[in-house]
Amino acid sequence: MRLDKFLCETLGATRKEATRIIKSGTVTVDGVKTKVTSVKVTDDSTVEWDGRELKFHGPRYIMLFKPDGYVCSHEDNTHPSALSLLDEVNLEKLHFAGRLDVDTTGLVLITDDGQWSHKITSPKRKCAKTYRVWLADPIGADYAEKLEAGIQLKSEKDLTMPAVMEIVDEEEHELLLTIHEGKYHQVKRMFAALGNKVEGLHRAQIGGLGLDYSLEPGEYRYLTEEEVEAVFGE
Ligand code: URA
Image (cartoon, rainbow, N blue to C red; front, side):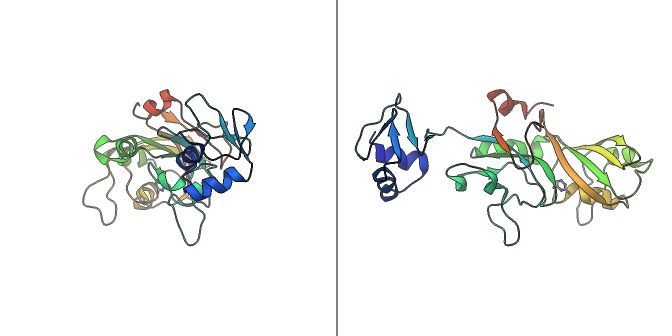
C-alpha cells in the first residue's frame, strides 16, 4: 500500500491532508524519514508520525474512568464530551456502551463495535451494573426489600427489575446497588421514589468487569481480550 493511503486509513485523513503531513517531513517508515507519498508500506513496516506509531485498528474496546462534569454524548452545548478525554483517531466512529449522567463518575465503556455495545445495553440481556451511591438521608430499613421487589418509577408502566442493595457505610449513607437495566436517571429515580435523594453516584462495575482503579479520573485504557468477554459474565 502507498504511504499516503496508509495515512488516510489509519488517521482517517483525506488524501490532501495525508500528502501535507508526509511533505512536512514528520513521517518515518522503519525509522527513516520520508517525504515521498508513494513509498510502499507493508504489514511489516513500522510507520510513525511525530514519534507516534500508526496502526490499523481492529475494533476498539476502551474503559474510561469518567470524571464529574463530562457528558456521554458526542456533542453538548454546556459540558465537554467524555470522548474529548481520549487521545484517539477517528473519534466520530466511537460510541458509548451505556451512558452516565454528567455528575456521575466511574466506569464507562467506549467502542466502535455496535454488536458488543448492544449486548451490554439491551434490556433483554439484563447486564448487571453496580453503582456506589451516597444518599442525602439515612438508608431506610426497608430499602433492600423494596429494591428487590421492584420500584414504581414515575411515568413508567412496569416496576423496576429486582435490584440488590448492600450497605457500605451506614453513617455516610453509602451503599452499593446492582441493577440489570438502564432507564434514564434510573438510580436517582429509584431513590427518589423511596423518598431519598442521591447526592453522589459512581459506577464501579459492568457485568464481570470492574473499573481499574489504577486509572485516575479522566484516564482510559484498552480492554484486554479477556475483559472484552468478562463484561458478559457475573
Ligand atoms: N442512574 C442514574 O440515575 N444516573 C446514572 O448516571 C446512572 C444510573
